[in-house]
Length: 199
Image (cartoon, rainbow, N blue to C red; front, side, top):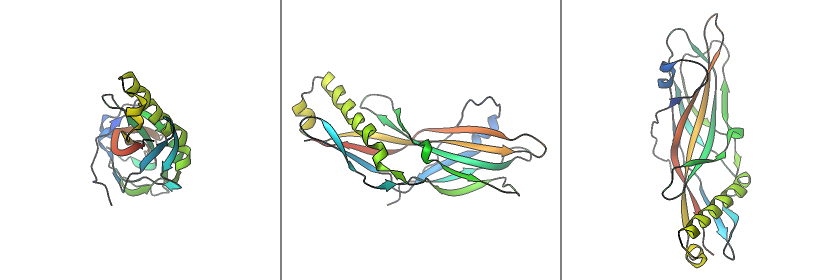
């Protein structure tokens, strides 16, 4: 099943350069199915990652438009990350997946625009194990502070919203000039799910 493709606004990150037009030239849509993670519990504590096993990949459509002048795209990097949103709180970054960034460099003649379907390298679910268990444990602590007992917390499944976003860097080249690298971020884009299963 393919998730709904949706264009997201991007924000030029502070990188010591002034190029307001660049912020309008890069966008991406996450495509494909996002993973559903599950953590199991035993004896009133979350203790193991049940799903997914093996590896998963993130897919996206990346579009890089024209910059004014004779700018050309030398390379780009698409670095995903995952944020967690606890009930009633703002989403905060939880898992940085920059090690599994998708990357592309171009040989001459360099393109003025890019329209690519990208796929991250396979991301092993095992690298997320400890962090996802910690997220469920933090949720349990927050629910205890609200006055809930362990019987209430672990008597059923709890669900957390995970939000996948990306940091994209684009290296532009100009004839006779030094390359410039611009950074873009899409804050909290597509939703995935973390299920904290009851005992």
